[in-house]
Image (cartoon, rainbow, N blue to C red; front, side, top):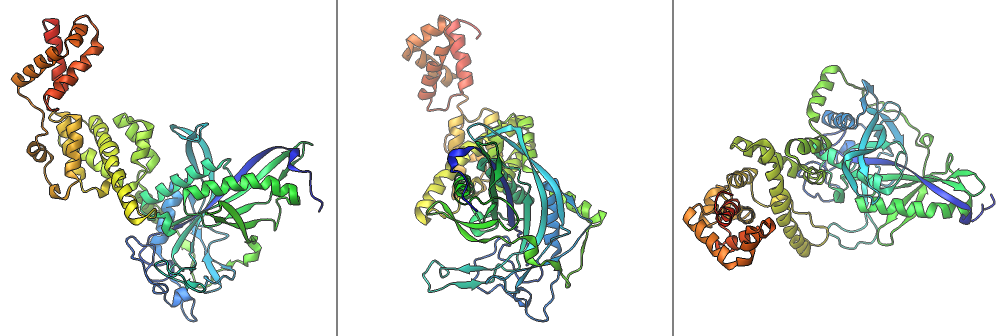
Length: 538
């Protein structure tokens, strides 16, 4: 084939991007045996090849038994993605050779997947690539979500990071329940893909189906990327699809896609290859060099020699099972966001931050409920609890995360608000104190910090505030003395207020707060200042 015209003949390139996602389900045992799963909640790091059994190894005479919990969790994800759940789905053998596939085939689903034909509506992206929360943007179609078993992996370092000659074949991961989700090629930018990836990870974590720790491979993204090129002569051609394998960070997903979109027009200009049967390639991502590299030509479906798995019965989902699974799904993150905005008047950005981490979100909701039970109005409780979680809490979590990174390196886990030591009940107690005007904003933040300390674990917030002298001063005589002192010290500001320049009252209130050491009630101080300077009622 002769090379086409150089890319100077290129008018435009329209990105066409689909996504495959592999989610390791956090069941206690593997997909087809009772062998412990390394993706289970709280599973410790295991030495290579210690989580294996005859089924994992595919030894003669071993027979698989389906993990029903893995099926239920897959159904939950499918429902959350708007999919239909098949009344009957079947297992297939997907045959190919790879060192970390001990049986020489993978048990998967091909013709009759568990979940199919779904869609997810994404929040809108602005021109700057930032999410416009509260507005809807692109709808992404879900082709299928099917269950299979994970493979093992090759280790090129010894456990702990030591150098080795050669590689270690570790089959601990082999047989772990793996949910593969395949989207339509509906994305038109790397930013849209990353947004969907974040939304999906959050859904899986909220449902409790996976821990979703990307550094541990609990969720892996594989974008399928090509472009439609419009040429100066009016022709339109599509570049071959490139699948970038096993990306385990949002940054890698974005960078790999953007690299491919930059490179593919030039590749087409050099070789003239277009999308078609047998033209798909698999590439890896080199994080250090920020480039993709060829791994192998991608097989088409017929190359895997799918055939029905003879050792497993079909999955039959009746109405009772479906109802039970629907009841497990509950309220999803985007729905929670909308509720927070409606109930508590939170901004889209605040609501998004609260739903970014499952545990933080549940902590916030517990704090709101405890505040309501103590007599605080729900809207006020929602707003105040959000302020404490997102401001007082996040500030301290970020400080501890920075210290942890300095100690453990960039791979250290972040510190969340739920790790600080303060309880949701204590946050609610601070909310109540603030609503009753017993503590000011500065004192409330200081009290939050004190309740994060181990010595105050389980302590009543008011008792700690009283012991630290953080409660507001209610003595009207003292307040009047502080106001008189402020008016004398800020004579010009006082004259400005008398002349109707209300903005000047801020300097007087500041002087009152300084004189009181922050213990005065700012609202009461304002009323008293206006009363004194107007010669009567404010």
